[in-house]
Amino acid sequence: MKLAELQRKLIAAARAHPPSNQVPYAFEKRIMARLQLRPVLDVWALWARGLWRAAAPCVAVMLLLSAWSVLAPANTPATDLPSAFDNAVLAAAEPEQPANPAE
Image (cartoon, rainbow, N blue to C red; front, side, top):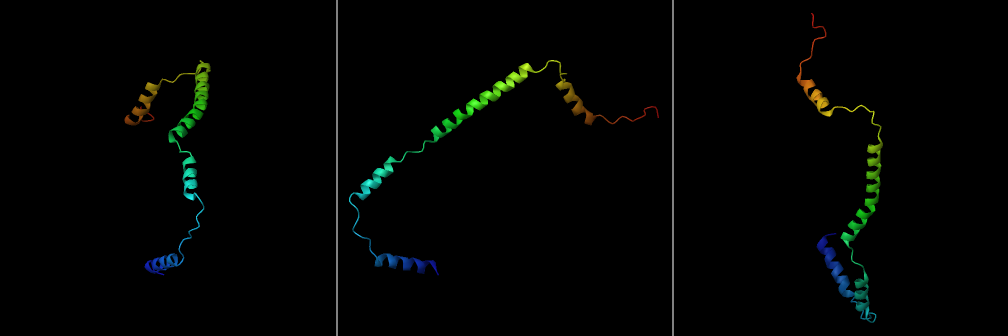
């Protein structure tokens, strides 16, 4: 069925059945009052609530990691990061040494 023909049939059906004049008393005022009672969605309040809920776990994780770093054993060998980085970068630049330099 074509769209224009469908539209024509729907308009003809709507004209054949006019709306009733029996609208309840103060119907539009009740609808407007109910619409005004709906709370407005506050996006900033949603963000604030979520951030406050996330603050406590973040503080707990921060305290655990701080305690772990303070209470970690001091006898673990510390790696010299700059020299390890230099060795890793320069390892590719240096040519391979022969296995037996005497040959």
